[in-house]
Amino acid sequence: MSAPTLQRPAPDEADLQRHFDAVIAAEHRIEPRDWMPDGYRRTLIRQIAQHAHSEIIGMQPEGDWLLAAPSLRRKAILLAKVQDEAGHGMYLYSAAETLGADRADLTDKLIERKQKYSSIFNYPTLTYADVGVIGWLVDGAAICNQVPLCRSSYGPYARAMIRICKEESFHQRQGYELLMTMMRGTPEQRAMVQDAVDRWWWPSLMMFGPPDADSPNSAQSMAWGIKRHSNDELRQRYVDMSVPQAEVLGVTLPDPDLEYDPATGHHRFGAIDWDEFQRVLAGDGPANAERIRRRRAARDDNAWVVEAATAYASKHGS
Ligand code: BYC
Image (tube, rainbow, N blue to C red; front, side, top):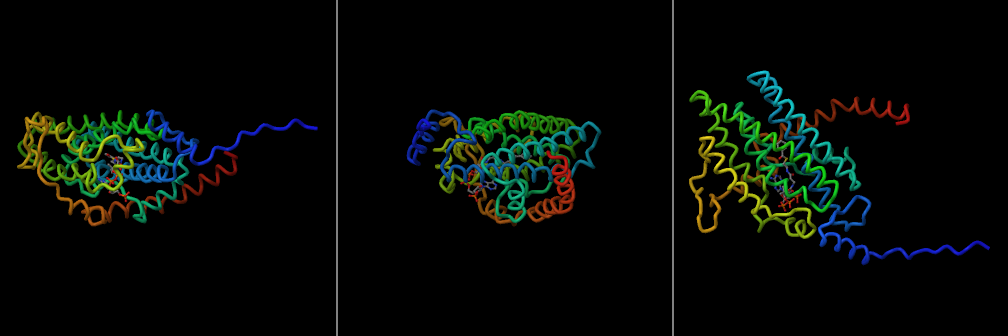
């Protein structure tokens, strides 16, 4: 007669939920094999996929200047930056895969416009000053938004963000250095920088998402420790950070209502055009159609490479 096997009863859903809540309350990390509520998994896949899509689509506006960079040095810097964005996309798609998402399925959802990417990348880069302003303002906003995500409650996302933020800091500095160089140049170069700042300032404020009162996901995402600060908190932090940088650079931020409030220690700023934001999200920004068209072409034109690599891998058992 064989000895009876001792089996612990499987924990029921309420136990699992209690354990999950305790991990979140203790500010520990949830890891891929841990039980998690379906809503937590869905929210993470949504946010991480959108973030990955933003990195990949974000290669386009700057990539447009690779063949027209003004010097070999600028070209090498820009090439490295655009390659970094591809790397960020890869880390993030990998993080989404740990949640059970399929990478090809996410790419399809981006192309079919079932998942979003950052509104900012639907604006065109008209001059080389835009490359500098993307580095300064867009990467600056990204750092502001993403440093707190290094403490996100989901382990693979938080760890991916650490490396991404280090690289984003380099991106921000290269942008600022490029703008500093242009501002020390000719009146035409200074005018190009001011024009780029005028076009990118308001869209960069929109990167932080809708106002807290109109942000359907914030409260739950903050309760789960996915987001650490609200959209408006981060936007304010970004404005406060950018004003002194604009002064050092010698540019004017295009907001007549921008003013320091000594009572709060923050800068008040003017009304954001949320209609424009909604139009861009709905697919009607200046470059939405072009961004998706190129992404679709990249998938379709390169499908044979994926097929060949898959066939090779299956033959060689890897
Ligand atoms: N653009 O409830 P909310 C980069 C959507 S990469 C488009 O506040 P949530 C870089 C939002 O998704 C920059 N959509 O949402 C790359 C939601 O839609 P769904 C990307 C936006 O998630 C290359 C709805 O509006 N960074 O910097 O709590 C070169 C309601 O919003 C936007 C990240 O992805 C927007 N701006 O908060 C250079 C960071 N804002 O899904 C630079 C990670 C909101 O309900 N993501 N929506 O249909 C986040 O931190 C958060 O997802 C957000 C939004 C703060 C963006």
